[in-house]
Image (cartoon, rainbow, N blue to C red; front, side, top):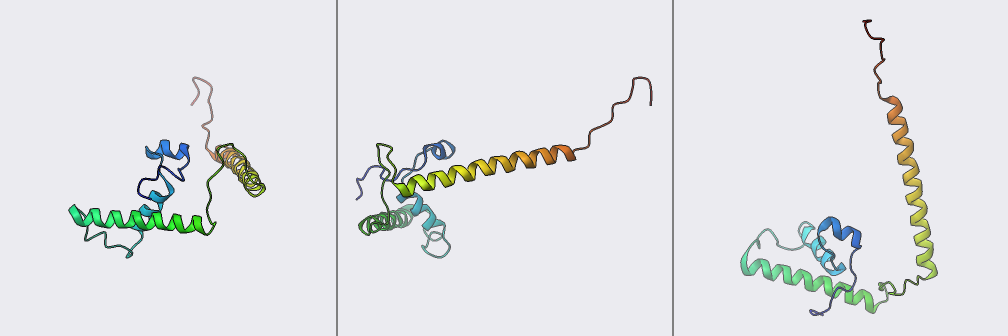
Length: 127
């Protein structure tokens, strides 16, 4: 498991924002480390203790993914671009939501623009 390449990579566009395309296992490990009280991160801020905690959390994340795969709870997207009916419907719902979100953002921008105070122009020489 330690030598597996990127198995479930993040969205490449998100990778541009974070500076790297990360595997789902790493994202889970980071979330585990950020969760309060789960792992003694505060006591292990440097040296061997930190490496031990990080290695353990990465192993836990890898085991979570492995177990989810065994149970059929997670699967990779097809490299061919073929989506199951369920994923096509989800993509359609996502696209509809994004369109609605864009339309709402445009409506809000128009409302906000109409509420801005526009100074009245006065003819030159008159005050």
